[in-house]
Length: 508
Image (cartoon, rainbow, N blue to C red; front, side, top):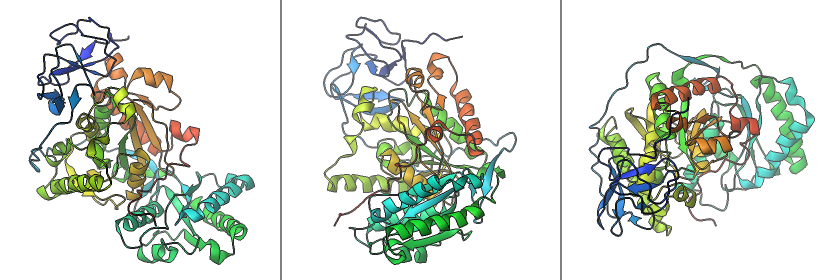
């Protein structure tokens, strides 16, 4: 039975706004609002519950999301025309709100591919990793040649061959932060447990040298790793032919792997949101946070990222840090981002995007408070740089831009074998070799884009489903997908264009 959708919701008793849950017309009388609406308000947008003076803080989730840039009457729409960032300071209160999660009633498992280094894959791909953009086309030609040849059909346990191509690797410094970040990213992909083997292809004369990659980082513990350069192999056609031969040999090894039971301590899930709207912090994000807590309680790991989209909400993470030192790492990354954006002529409040604003989000503070909800309530055990190998279990943070493909690329390089992605506007993407679960924040978008969405979280509003029930539903889908069930993005074939390393520094 459908639950009548209320007109609006007040998320915290301290809030001086409510959120419209349906499109409301001018003159509508809304509970908790001191006057009829002054004009129409779209669903997901904010309404002043009482008069707000110019310069007064606007409160959502019990937290400051900005200040009124002019007087706002009760019942008035609050958005970009009357709400701005304003000055804000946070009380980080490091490690003061660390609350251990209750132990699960019983252990759970999934069926995965056990690797020589102790990791467990949720998929069994072969990868063609490129050191530079100049070898990208050849990597694609090798994968296309294998597809045309049809011999992958002989290896039913191999999920496919994935060319990992990108737009950098040369025309860059060989000793700066950008080089180190790309190095970590490529090495991390080579080690991701969802790959059963890697062929590394370079051109030969690039800054990101193949010998450096294989010499400074042990690419794979299982030995199912080969490399070549186009210049040394003899050009395009010879490299394609040799690459196909090598990958067939590697497929023989990869096909021997079969799914076996694994404890949930071997699941590492990247938490993402993209195309967020006013519902994100009400439905999908907190529901995913509950699922994150369930997985962490079972010994698994979840990764929150997108540093530019926790800005203004970082104090909610520092308080959950297991030590003051871990909390301080979050603050150091925030300060780095303030300097990084300033030197590049940007600002932290370039977010939200036009789509976010159309969906009801106004400031980065508001967006960040909703985004942090993906991380649940678990203690924050560690903070990592982009693509740095994650070694601590539990709930962790990895520094990254808010640009979804880049952020997910870093999470996969850090070891994520599953991605959970909430969206309100309807983001479409996939991230081979790691399956991506899409969570819709609202029912209208879910129904319109059901071929792309795995779970509808809008029924928290439309059907009265609790956050706990939805979190459990998401958690159970984690285990099914980890065991081989295809996500919608996998069915559609996504994953060929979403490897986007974080490009830093001068292009020379």
